[in-house]
Length: 293
Image 1 (cartoon, helix red, strand yellow):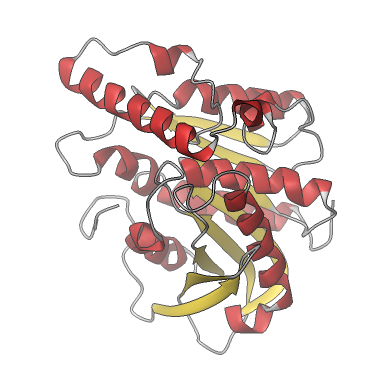
Image 2 (cartoon, rainbow, N blue to C red; image 1 turned 120 degrees about the vertical axis):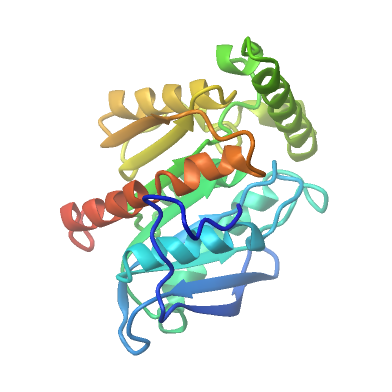
């Protein structure tokens, strides 16, 4: 994700922005993490957003979302954001990453003071593989009795290890977009091969939330996809399934990404919807009193 200092509609960086390096507890050890906050240093925020980075389960780092998360907390200083690392499939495959994700949420609830957080509201978010983790950890938190989540933000989520949707299999007519779509599809396939080497795991709801038959009692969701993005169908199908199960869900397909810009595909979903993401988090906060199920 690149810098968007002068992009219309993208929040300016707050002058009192603070980033802090932290260590959080994963499922089997310590993980690096970064905390983002703006506004008065002494005040506790009521909302913590835990953001999982992308990279197809096999690569990526917390550095990738730096500018995006800086602008998210700048857009609403009442939110504090935490970007934790998680175990990549190159080290240990499924379910290591999702177990890390759930362990980080439990750690956050126990270490509120370190996060300038009141502990009232907890939102999970992520992009691509990280959005898979955000969706899955919402299932895990429900199944394991906590922690209670206020919302989930899924940006171009990888939800279907079978790569079976039409948008994943059909190539756009435009050669440039077809090349990008082919690259994305190939990256997703390679990522799933690394993350799910055991074929039987590919239907597990904690690996493939799109295949889950139990989607009730989940937090409200904002699901963002993009035109010409191979992941758009699974994003929209998951949104439809959540809605059918009674989950308050907003699904948006964003304009085609600016391919001439490096990282344009990710930037389209993140930056051009940044105010909407911040507003969604504010909205679910206002609609869901602390402890309300």
